[in-house]
Length: 84
Image 1 (tube, rainbow, N blue to C red):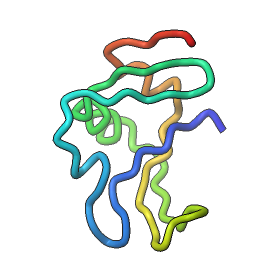
Image 2: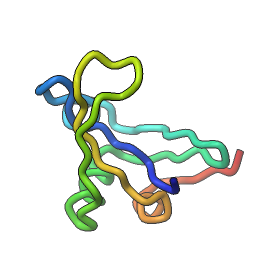
Image 3: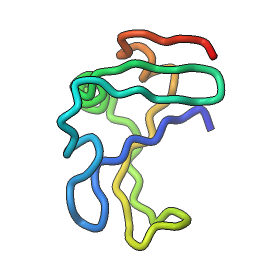
C-alpha cells in the first residue's frame, strides 16, 4: 500500500508508540531497514496528520488504534535508511 502502520493503542490502552521507552526503532520492509527515533515518528504524525485507523487485525482479540503513514513521508524523519 505504500504505508507504514504505527500502532498507538490496543484494546483501549496505550501501546507501541505511546508506550515505548526505546530511544530507537528499527522498521523493516521488503526493501529497507529504517532507523528512526520514536520522537521523530510523533513529530511526523503531528506535522503531517496521517490517516487514523481503528480495526481488529487478523489474530488480534481486540481493536487497535494506529496511523497509516506514507513510507516516503516517514523516511524524511528517519535517522538512517539502509537498502536490503
